[in-house]
Length: 153
Image (tube, rainbow, N blue to C red; front, side, top):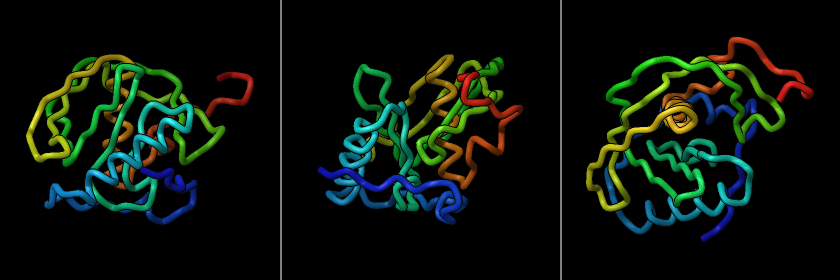
C-alpha cells in the first residue's frame, strides 16, 4: 500500500473519460488499497482513480464506516434534489454550492468483479455523483451554482 499523488486543477487527466476495468487482479487490488490509503491521509470522503492519474472506472468512498469500493460504477436511479457546499481534493481550498440528487442508487462491481447495489442519501448521494462524474472527466466546478468565499465554508 502507498500514498499516491492527487492531481490538481489544470491536470489534463482530470478531464478525460475513463476506461472500464476488465481485469480483476492484483493490480486492481493495489489501486484500491492505494486509493484508500491516500483518501485516509486527507480530510476527504471520496477519491476517484483519475485523481491519482489512473484512467479507469474506479472510485472509493469512506464516511467513517469503512471503505466502499466501486468498480465500473453506474448511477441507475436518482430521486429528489439538494443544494449544498462541495469541494474536491483536486481543488484544495475551493468550495461551491452544487445541486445534486437527494438520493442516488449505484450499481458497481467489487474488487473481485461481483456486482452490487448501493443507495445513498444526502452527503452520500452527493459523493456518489461527484466521484462518478470524475470517471467521465467532469469536475464539481462544472456544476457549481456559486463559488464560496473562504469565510463561507
